[in-house]
Image 1 (tube, rainbow, N blue to C red):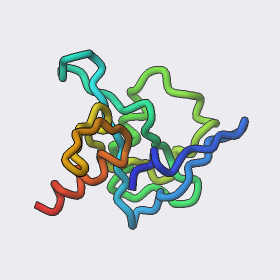
Image 2: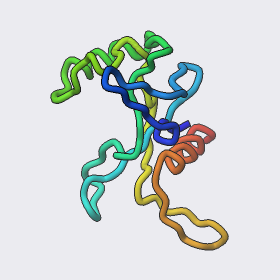
Image 3: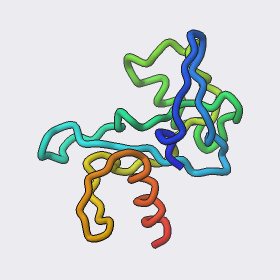
Image 4: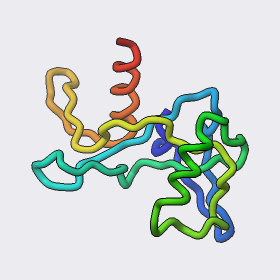
Length: 126
């Protein structure tokens, strides 16, 4: 499931990530290229969600990586706005912008985690 498809509700006190943030579900985020006609730089897609669960605690396999990210990344929001002890998501990400598909023999351009999720599922199934 893509967190971008689930949505994000904000309140003035703390961000509230909506399900799925359970460690029983693999969450898929979306990425995009930052330059036109180049794949040199990739970043999280602006329409993809993510964050920390306010319901599920962080599993042990995330603790070291997330601690490193929080301690070395510049310009993060104030920690009072998110739960650093909650499960972090997404788990993986795939291209989700300027994604070309064929439906009924028509070439279409789509975007979002609805494009990234089937891509990840296809790779895992191999």
